[in-house]
Length: 483
Image (tube, rainbow, N blue to C red; front, side, top):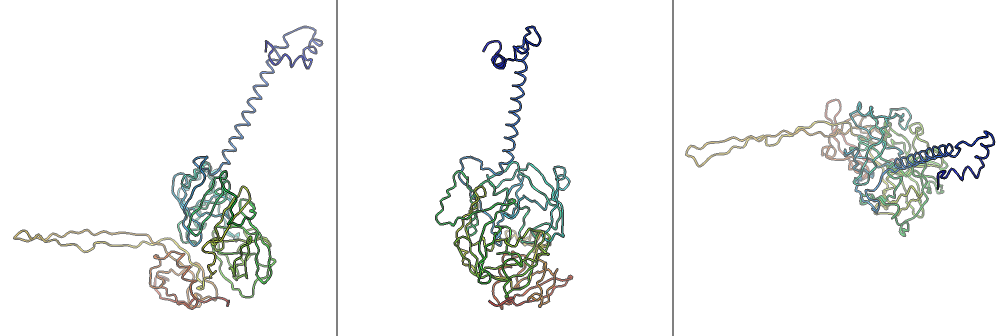
């Protein structure tokens, strides 16, 4: 473009050269000076554009979250442990295998039970205050950035986790299964997920290849608020239908929770109960049954409902028109969650017709540490006789082995007032060593839960340890209200 390059037409068009000549009266190399200024300006502009591009790319990289190992991969199928209707999955945190509870009711990834406190605190970027559901128990969670979280080949290479060191904020002893973390919104936010409770797997779809035309499924609008999924549904408590916005909560083991004194009255057939545990709190409330529950065009008959006491559940924002759908309801459907497009698809599965049963014992059980049990193998020596010699000799072989095995301690965490367990003289803190003549460590908590809600009038025999002494006790399962 000649000596002046792009600067020459720029000067001529805007009359800058003539203007300078008129003022200074002599012809210096204006083109050279302004050309230098122009080049400097363009270099700075290029740097600015590069900086904006890098920042944009960096932001996009940080927000990518979980990704398939290949962009053209259509889906992954990942098995999980269906434990008492809770979804527990093996997840690797920086290459270390751990059990995570998959919980749509949380917006951050939480890890607990770690012992390397000093090393972790060195990597911490900030800490946040965590409250129990009652608001009374508090602790800190420490944010550790840029971790690799992977489920098979489904991986997030820049994942933030919040580490809790307080032993009270631990769910393993509450649910009866070893769990070291909770994974929620970050897992679900960018892909489509099919949850199959009946066959215990999750299928993760690449959104580009997901077929939205699902004829056998009912489609509903899904609202994501503060990282949590909500759906509208109807409930008929006392012969009158009311619409609620329900949190889809895979981390809740109950059926349906409603706020007390909401726009629906509590049925006359009800009883006070301990509904369960929060992180560090016991949640109390009232239990009953509704006439029916309807989501989309699908209706459930006589579902369990609970009204948590606001004093023990005040740490949670619970409005008059909101509720919680827990896994006792969720397990009865195949679910497809599409957070990005605000859609949820569902259809009944083989659990749909299961009856909603209540615990009829009044016991709220939890695991409280471990006890060492010693086993001996080949304790008696074997004697071998050498018969080939005239002087028969005997050789004594000792292959004794000693094994020490850690077994969970099953303890009564709380007792419902005026229940069968209360009347039978059980007290909080009793250690249960046997149930129906079988050692308690041979059961998991899911089996015990089914046993204690199995049949009204059934006698359940226990062996308990209290103050170092062994006692035998029994209780009769009984319903708290008539159907």
